Length: 166
Image (cartoon, rainbow, N blue to C red; front, side, top):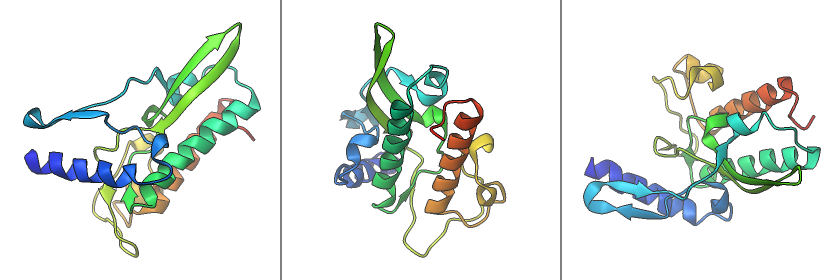
């Protein structure tokens, strides 16, 4: 448990160095003797939020900021392994029928893994079955493209729901 805590602490430290770190939900504090992390509250996730009627510019921003969070991980050699709408968190408000989004962040990086360039992880089905890439379903060669494929499934599902920006 202590090893996992230190490993995650190092992963968080690496991601904080990315210019896109604000798009990843990172802990704001920790309780080392309990191996616990404290996170800022986010008001919703994309799965719940997707039921709202949103202007095109806002839909594009949510997807763009989500991709920035994925970039923050990938540029540090980290594969999320579980990209899905529940792991895209956001803060939003509504006033006079107008929705404003303050933050969009990729969440749940506790199970993310370092995968060196030109290497893959095999022998394991990553992520939720509904949002999983074909190679992750087959316990095949998984790496950064695995996250991108899962994100494409998210965009496709949003499109079918009528809220994706294309």
